[in-house]
Length: 445
Image (spheres, rainbow, N blue to C red):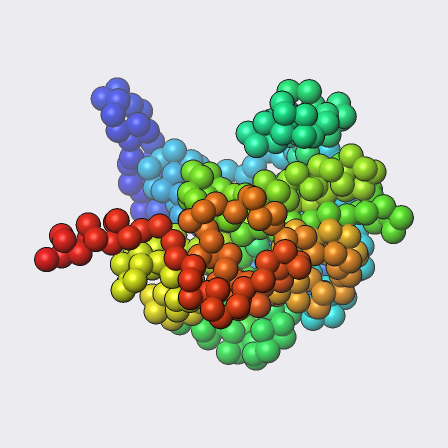
């Protein structure tokens, strides 16, 4: 079956090209005898033994994963193919895409320890050109799931610290103009379902069934392809930023500073003052720079888990509920408002988070910029020692974020001796929003 599409519908002179559409669509596939060439052996000690992650439809070689490369971006790829902008059979040219610095294998890349072995990303995903050179020469379409590069980043607050003399440029990590030199890695999720099921304390069958049901049947192979243990979920990935010498991570005589940060677009990008997200992220960057300047290394891992992995729509609904409740935005009702809207207070499942640190080879964190016990417990469970936990400085907390910080500390977040909140204190903390609440009530009337 062949259809025709315009390349650029706004252009009346646009050339029309053929777009191949299959005469039938397979709604699901069923187990077949996978060749040894592609059968994945998760936890193997070498990429050759483990074999490549293959998520592309191709003729001679079957996929060995459920889902599609690129996660949510696979939808945009589908649109590009549908509109004729992209050849559905195009294979990326990976020339000159290799990492500019090495992240060497370590014991966390292989094995079967539920918590200390990587289960939610492909540790070999950044070096497929070397690891799977023979397969690539055969024309097998293997896609990287990790990309490593170097960059300069601009953080206005850091530039201001340099201008005020509060941070001193060293010319290598922090420059005179306030720019910061970093190494960074973009990481797509690659889930080994048996390993994740053990972490979550459920059976593999239960995990597969709930993933299938609660994506409204989007991935029937979760049920029909029980021979495929790896899932490429359509969720956001993460980016790891390394400040200083990456080799310091594995050196027990050099110190490591870490901030693991979950996305908050409203604060991180647009500066919303209802939470501490950007201030804590900036504080983490500052501490990472200082650690690198002192001969250690700093690591920021930025996860795309907007709104505690409940989503930005849910987050904004919660904001409305917090401000419109009787008495306005109150610290004592902070978590209840989220649970009332979403049915759960937090869906981030930090047990997946340490994999990025394990991939980098982190064994000890001298300074962990986090007050979250969920993050701390997940890191320690992964076998990573945490020497010191650093709370966000009190002068970095926006006035309207006192509701958030007070509620979190009262409910168990580690205040590092800086924050102490009693039940009586909690009842007194209220946020801005009384004016907007009155305005909303007038409109309702």
